[in-house]
Image 1 (cartoon, one colour):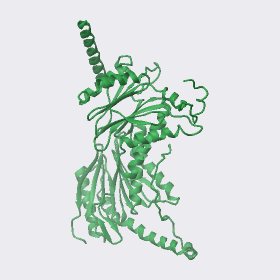
Image 2 (tube, helix red, strand yellow):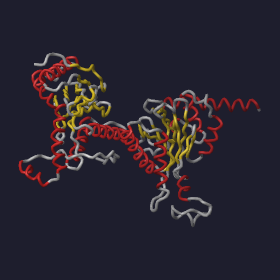
Image 3 (cartoon, chains in turn yellow, blue):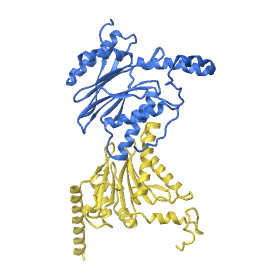
Image 4 (cartoon, helix red, strand yellow):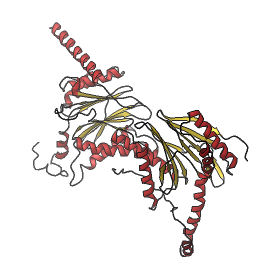
Length: 247
Length: 252
């Protein structure tokens, strides 16, 4: 990407059709994984270790936009804060005008449109965040959407975003199946396993949020997480043993 | 307090908060015909507000609120199963009476803003904080081109201080905490009953009986027929629907 002369201004296309500022923004993001089960959605983020003197808050990267919409983001936290705030107002505003809670697609489209506006105006840089938006529509169907700094949004059954997202996505493609995520435990295990592919193993490095239809969001507590991580490690060891024996 | 930016359906509204003085009456001839028509329409709308009845009573551990269930338009009853109470949060309810349309618009606007606070901050506004926000909104709109003509009673329970709270708020933006109050002409009759019989340490059943007494007094003495009242109880367990009270007894 010999781009130095075309990446100064946000509003300039390069000769091969790239908007470099937008692409650079996509490099800013960290790791988030999301999975949509039959009647559950699970989002998992990598929890960076905090300095000793810093107060650790349990929820930082996963936010509630409304009672039925969850968002996890990767990238610049400050940018995400603005997006989350606007999305929250939009959720209530939508309820006020049409008396129905937002559908996942609507709120994703809103966030994506907001992001796109910042890729096409002078004097403003794009939002350096990728968002995974998950939740349930009023009729109970689960959805999982991904938005990126350019303002595109896509729907997924399972996805990851951020650095090394490709590795995680390949893992998910290999292991995702409808039976695997038909139960809540199955979905949680899949998500944690996927994230642990690229994150140092340990319950204190991940944060898991679960949502079921018509129920409030649940953050998985450290004990359940440790149990799941323990199970995953045991399975990994067993598989490694099997491979050794085959040889 | 951070400004809550909010989209609203714009509705046109006649300024109903004009205070009439004898002098201003003379100046009416200078106004266009439409304006004086608007102002006379105002009087009938203010009366409309008084025909509705809201009753609220606060006890040691709970708040009991009752609202009449008739939606009136001039001389006709549009519906008799109207719900004039709006739940603002898990432990807060607002009973609204006033100009048709204003009531719903204002109540829904406040309710959604209170939900927004909960989403933004992760916890709900306490009842007194919510009341202050509501009063501030009402008072700000008062001296603008879109005042709301609504009277409200806000009843709630604060889980942190373990106290029941009841607030009076009228269309001029006055708000005070009260032990009990009744809005409208019907409310005037209930005040006499509660003045005599109210005790802060009543149980839920005793309070419900007192409410029944108030409502049967309204049936006895008020010229307008308000047959049914919706009753709700707010305590530390949240909101509870009590059976609808159908007024009994002979008119005086």
